[in-house]
Image (cartoon, rainbow, N blue to C red; front, side):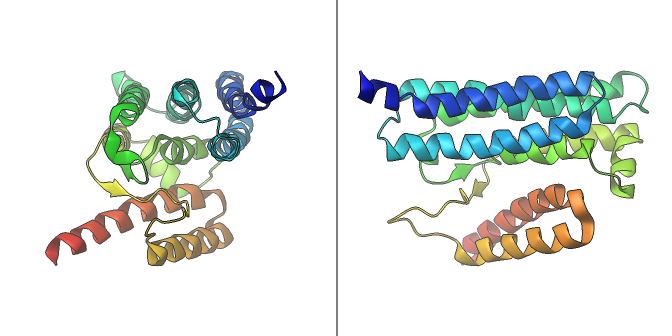
Length: 229
């Protein structure tokens, strides 16, 4: 009984992730987007540790995998989609509803991930958590970049389309985790670390979308260079 209870610890972290996602939506609709950002960051930490603990406790199984995907859909798919809608309050008409693409493609990506055996040690397409974090971060960002995206209908639609399609793209992406026995793109890791630290120091919260862009573009360039060899 004791061992069975211990093995439920990763699922508790996953449910914590889901709770943060639900509360994030609640905060967005109550006009507190900054709280939604903090909750999503906390959810990302819980999301990291549920997998880590599952492997540590040898409790990784199909139930945990499915539960994790359901939690990620709410926290990093649905909640960030609503943040896009909230942030685009100056856009009138149907263009503002492009936000729903993020939720739809997040669901498709997570279902695809669960059945795709190629994604055991790395990703194909941009992971849902980093996409969700980059989208929800706009709720706390004050920058001309945000104004450019969220005050022009066609730019907003294009942004929603691009981040959604990248979720289900066939671009190989590193998992940003060091695993024993696996060759890791160390140079890319160092580049992303330096980019994240530098952008945090100079641009504040805009560092999250900058890190997302650096992660995607560096992965595209590395794969392009590999194919040219």
